[in-house]
Length: 342
Image (cartoon, rainbow, N blue to C red; front, side, top):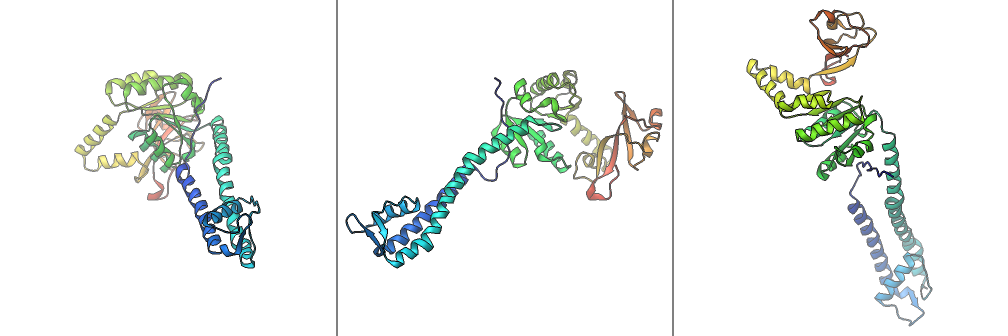
């Protein structure tokens, strides 16, 4: 039977801190009861030797807190009995709740959370899978969340615990696994994903991951980061739909800044949700059909459309009439900069 790696999700505080806080609270309450009993030890009677020592007080406190009650030491004065009823009993209940709560949190609740995450894992669909959470992967996830993608719809796979910890802090589901292995990708339901982002840090690893993903998920869109220009064609042949070369993009920004002081600034604007404008890809809508790409029904500014696998610019004759089923790239302002167009 195949063993699946479990997904993980962010917890509010570390396990060790939770245990320490609960244990400290319980010990503190027990210490308070010991002090109360010791200062009122004259109201207690020891049926064994008639003398109540400090050790007897500690012993009586423990059997009292745990409601064992052997009866060898008992409160006899009215004051001692009042203290037991009014002060010690609420503390006893609090200590019991602490231990019961700890048992619930670490046995029942965590077991339920594992079961729930397993159920989520089984039902994963239309999620974003990020394979590799280095600089590029983490920036991509930050941008996705900023653009409105729910963090719990993102699954991050990496083998570095520090990177996974960062991903959990962002609210993502994480899995510690090797993205080049079939079983690892099957664990995140790769064939049901909305899109896959690959950034392994090395071109050879990224291309191998793309090959594996394409083998398991023939129709899922794949975007991969490739750093050497010679490997871009290999990544395409491996099955990547989009190949991003950060070195090439940096070169475009540099060249843009050389040709005009504001060109690079605008390119950076387009690439980030924090800018004033944003590129969006969407399918043609009924009110777009029959219109020129530059005059879409929604008022958006169309830049390019994709038809039958071919990219068509707004200046080309085919762009004079948008068809049903066309995929359109439009430009719009970000919400922060004013009313958007879609």
